[in-house]
Length: 128
Image (cartoon, rainbow, N blue to C red):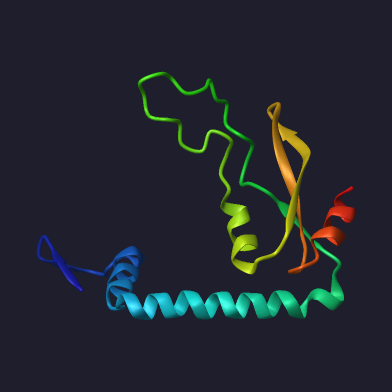
């Protein structure tokens, strides 16, 4: 507990989370990420007999409007949108095909098909 103006105050969830994270050393964090990746790949392989492909959005929202880079200024960060939904596919070594399927406010939002490792040709045929 913290003391604020003479009163005991419960720590916030954020404070508890940061204290917990600070208790880990770099090696334990790296090991946790590696284990998570191995577990994710095993789960992904286990669903193969039950689904030919997975479908997901390819991004959390439409691509941002972008006027282009301006000479003499730093390049715009992620001018085509946020790739966060593609990071898991990369971790799984899973092929994915993004299809411009819908739009919001006139800007494209893609859907992506996600396949199994070494099934690139099959996944591409599904996308067609």
